[in-house]
Length: 60
Image 1: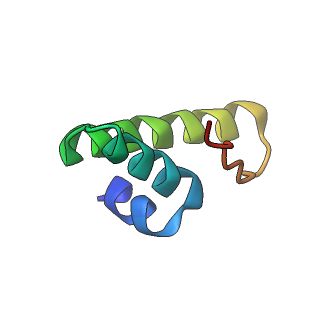
Image 2 (image 1 turned 135 degrees about the vertical axis):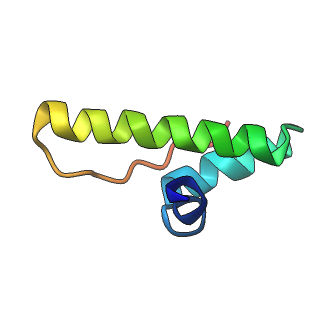
């Protein structure tokens, strides 16, 4: 459920999700990638003891 909510409210995750859908991935596959990205974000925040900073990657 966290991935579903983050697709709607987190610009980083939403951008990745939309990018994957545009490339032809299925919705469940793109949602799985969103879940993995959330795990990476949580690990980075815990490891480095720094607050989360949004970083929307430039499309290209």
